[in-house]
Length: 498
Image 1 (cartoon, one colour):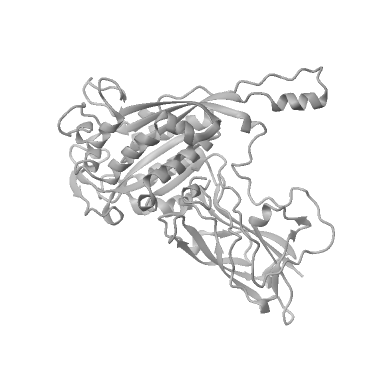
Image 2 (tube, helix red, strand yellow):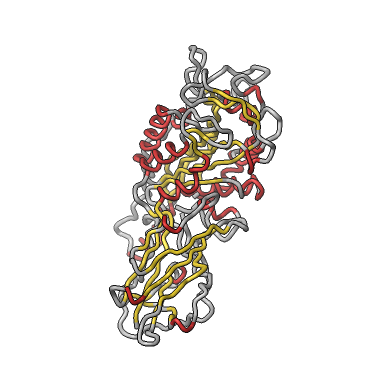
């Protein structure tokens, strides 16, 4: 699930899977003391099944990509552009460059055969004037018009009809369930060697895909949440390999806040101070499409907006089979030699593969003074991930699969480009029920959603400039439609008594 990489924007988005973190072996007083005896299982010890474990042949699949970009044209968006300069305007400018088909095709790489991009103004009016999304690029209209007041309801000069939000419109157009065109079957008269050579020379299959991008202040009422999430559910039912990402961006704002379900009677003015991090109003990008395409798009978007803005953006990823954030083995744990603890490479007769050595911390322990001492592990770090940004974490939200290992403290380290978690653990070997056992420290997706978004969410009809009405209701509903009971974070530990 996590967007991760040692590079600046690449941490995003595992936008979107998680690659194994290329770490060093643990330095310091832990010495590898591989146990003798017989080992089994060439597969070693998988820590977590990740989104990177592709089906055979998927790497030879290309896509014809249709991109649909929908911009909310309702009155609540006007405050983002009223002053003529804001982060919202910057994002519109950056997207205009990023979404040009030639640029997008270059950024997305060889897996994309062709790109078509269409822009729409979203919203409907109570009259018959506007019944569906309005295509941009016709009759002199442009995506860049979204930088100006005229694009929004009540904006001047009035060049577009006044509309109210109808966010699900961007999800109206979906390609049919895509089955890649099968490559020709090699001739049965070929020898085995010739057949292998023939398969390698086959052209990749090509499928048709869509990526939808919604730009909005969100604030859905109950009906809109239902409509949006039902459409999202249908997309994932047709395309289980898709991913959705929600990005929240605080911006300068000077305009009117409206109730999500009673906009005519409940409204209030709001003006931020000019410091988006302090009291800016959030707007959102909701992106859904093929997982690797969304992943790369979000990475490139973060590159385009620059570090100052990128380090204030909150994010969540939604995927049927997500990749959890794993342990960063490139860390030291403040352990003491007198605790009689050392590093192991074998657990339950299985030896770690080279890749798995970056995912597991297996500890062996000898008795000291006739007993297994309690061990305090500090600075147990996660891989870096944008999905952690903006959260306040507490130890009680983390689950341990074994009661003799407890999370005693957790902090978010967000002083560099990409944040990571720092955990402290207490291991009481005397309480272990087995001489060898795996231990999993986990945080589920629902708890992570709550941690990230709760301070930006408000109840319906409670108008607060820094918050979004029913944001948590929307996030919970999307999560429930896409995935259930998945781990957002998973630390894989092992314990071996000598």
